[in-house]
Length: 376
Length: 201
Image 1 (cartoon, rainbow over the protein chains, first blue to last red):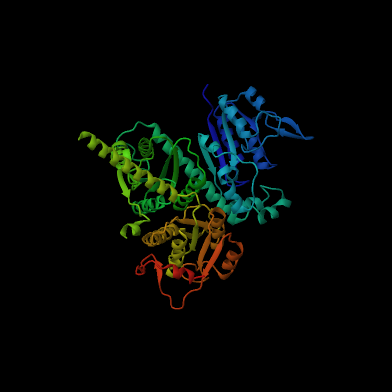
Image 2: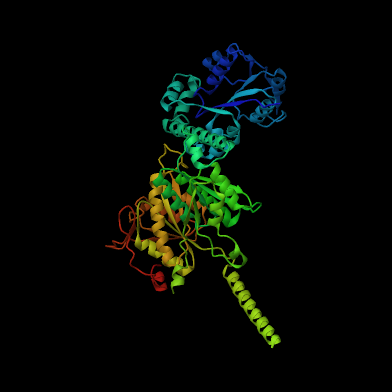
């Protein structure tokens, strides 16, 4: 059975209109003749939201009692029994109480999708695991309900519900987000303009990255040709120069990264860093430290740091270069080869033979620390 | 006759093998499991005091330590702390390249960092949280290369740093600096002696 299509409405904060937009699109689908049902709706007593839900059938919630407290939750078996073509399920990051099928609502949604039902859902950016710390640092507010970023990656579509911080604050002041008595506290804490501006940027970047990842995935699904064929055949696509640097978790790689980044700056292009890790080798101790340093450097430079666990460095580098549309491959100078390794063809030559046509290989020399020693 | 040749070959192989084995054992001994000592040299901007850099290099040589030059970058609050900082990164990359060049010429291993923070102190605190260092060498507040670190920041560093802190007073009329963005680095001095190191303490 084919899985359902998954669409997520992502927002920077409560009140931007994610749920409203989800309901609006649900209504449009219903008008187009599809069978739409609300799996779970959290209207937060907002009149506009409740109005938008009018006319849509809602699967009754179920009551779950935990530690003498009874709460209303989405009835997953009920949704699956009802089996609409499209289910609207609000707040995918919600944690379920013990005693139901799954710990998280996003896992409930996975079941619904697996049953072939399309799902529209909503989430705020601070619920994404990788951004949780960052958002907490920016806003001073940490949310406990988080979901893995892969949830966003698994969606067929991610729609960013964007609103300027000023417009959101205006909505808050008008009492459209929280009741009057909570407005001032909200304005003094989470809903400060600088917080919202930072959150907005985080959301925009998140969606941009998600779009980029999807574009790259689509590229890899297409038949490979030479670079010239790709360029000729894909005019609207953002094809240009792209640099891939093969790094290792050691300080000498930083020079390679610096050189590669400088080249990327000159060409006005993107930089990817790739470490091909031996399968099963643990990332701990000094390796972990260096990996963290490389990751940090990549983040500062706006480069992408990729780790591939493979035996074959050359084949992996060639595959990644092909997938990412690399036009320059940067490698560090090889260590002096000893023993039987001398009989092996040098890495640059092996790379040249394996990489897609049109990709240049550039070697960045080490700056050996025993230079002076050699001179003595 | 053939026996003699065979014996000679066997002897030569034995001697050669013994030599290689001894060398490999010696090399293995050199790579002891003793943790590497690290000297942190934090800086900001596009210049660093040559005096501070040279002091850090002298110490690194004397202690067989690794130099960790660290560029501290301030990220405005309106931006996420982990956002790319291309303009600052440009300065950092040039400075780190220049420092590495100088360190390498003196036989000192370098493991550079770029750390972001809401303030220079915040960046330094984050760095000290994530990296274990044995010493911190920093020019006094307002000196070249640490304009961002105030006297208060240095007091904070003395109190909080989990390492020995060496704050260098600016030498009167010390014009030497390692700089990027058009300034020409001074490349004249050679590696200093151990005596110079003791003179710093």
